[in-house]
Image (tube, rainbow, N blue to C red; front, side, top):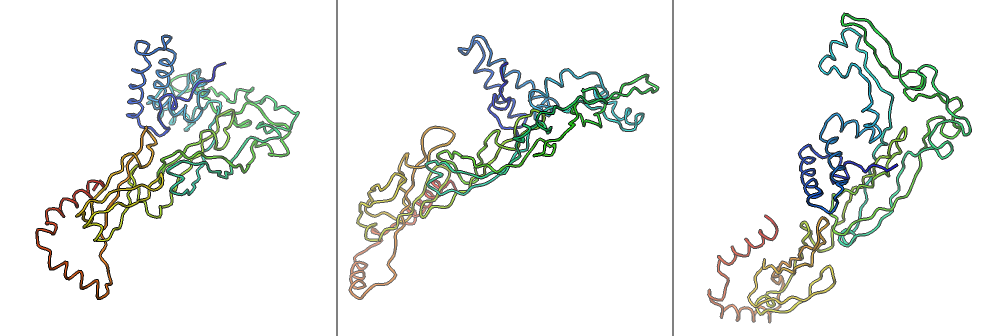
Length: 373
């Protein structure tokens, strides 16, 4: 028997996707995998996408799927006539039958999602890494394999509901005879009763276990990102799938690099002599040391862009850039000789040698543009 793929995975969306997100994803994939446009002439993928959209675009079906998975949909499709089919008549039924609710046999339930967080270095975020994380989760009992029954002793069919997990009560009202279906109180909807419980889990079928998982950190991940490890949460009930494990990423700041999305910024301090005469200097980069040329007359705020030397784009190919921001330093203490020389230099300078205020405005605007401000 072929295992059905997860509907959210088929459409490439997360479980919290909005109705609009579902519709957009479906339109895109339906066009891509239509037999007239793709190599899949059988249309199998197209059919699967249509099936996924048919469930996730319907609020009631989506709620059933989120709780019980595929098996829940299959069981719900065979549901008999009950008071829920009346839709707006719910209040009338409550008035005549004392608020009794219709129930079906409890189906598979997905396990709970678990969350954790890890802190990584700037370099680990940039280049990617693998970290080991401890997790305390609920798993099926290793002695009874989740049945809750003592090994060798099989659960017996519930005598009250005959194994259906439901009890039916016929009631007479002014509308005629109606059958009210409720969850069996003896077996709690399981359809079977455990005669002798497992000594390890005491009949729960579950046990809490500490595990150590390996989390793969993709290159380029940013602070606040979240990695989803599907099926690594608590185990499900009645054959339901396990929940997911969400890992929040905290990235430590770098010693001198500043990150802006996938670009990195480095402030390069130079003396006013280097800025005035020009120079060639080494600057750190993600790949090591690299050289840049400072043109004569450079001012504080001048930007140098090193294309493709930033951080890898997680969602697409390529990398960001490295921006080098020039900062001209003014000496704070001078000896007598240095003061005399600077005074001599100052006497030779004219307004034509000094930067005009419009030039200052130009580099300020350039910095704002580079920083996205």
